[in-house]
Image 1 (cartoon, rainbow, N blue to C red):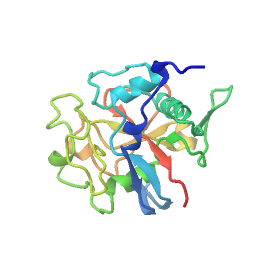
Image 2: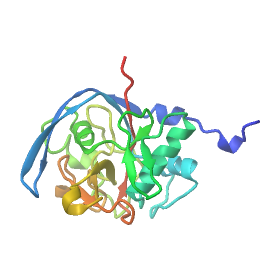
Image 3: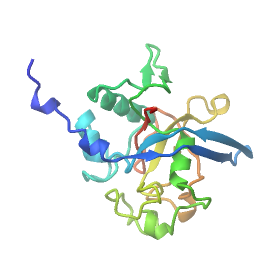
Length: 234
C-alpha cells in the first residue's frame, strides 16, 4: 500500500541531534534524606536539545504549549505524555518501545529496548555536568534562560552556550522529565525532573537540583523533556 505523505517523517533532524555520551560514574545526593549514592553510567545517546514544539507536534499532532514557537521547547506536558511521545517516535523509527502500558494503566520501563526514552536522572546529571564537578557548567547568564533574563517566557533552544559535550539548555528554559520514580514508599508514582526553568531564580538552575511530581496530572509551562537512547554495543 502506498505511504501517505503525511505519514513520512524525516528522522535526520532527530538523529543529527543525538550526542554520544561516554560511560563513567556519577555520585548523586538527595538533600531531603541526606543520602549520597554512586551510579555507573553506560555510554548512551542524548538529544542535543530539549524536544521542540515542531517535533512534538509532528509525532503527536498536539500542541499543549503556553508559549508558542516551533523551536521553543515543548512544555505543559506530563511525564506520561512525554513517554507516549517516546514510544510513538520509536514506532515510527521501527524501534522497540521502551515503555510498556498495562491494562491497569501501570507503566513499566524496558531498559534493554533500543527505542527512544527519557534519560535516567543519573544519566541526566552526568550529561549535564559533562565532566565538571561544579554546580553549573558555565556562567548562568551565558548558558541558561532563567528568571533574571528570560522575560517571563521560554526561548528557542540552542541560543545559549552548550556544555563541553555539546548539550544545550541543560539548565534553564524548561525543567526536564527523567524516567525514574522519586521515592515510591513516600511519594508513590511521582517522577523526577531536573534542570531548572525560565521562571526559576539562579539557585534553582543547578546540575544537582531534584524535583518530583505526579506523572499524569502534573504539567506546567516550565517543564518539558529531552530524549535518550541506549547505545548499541560494538
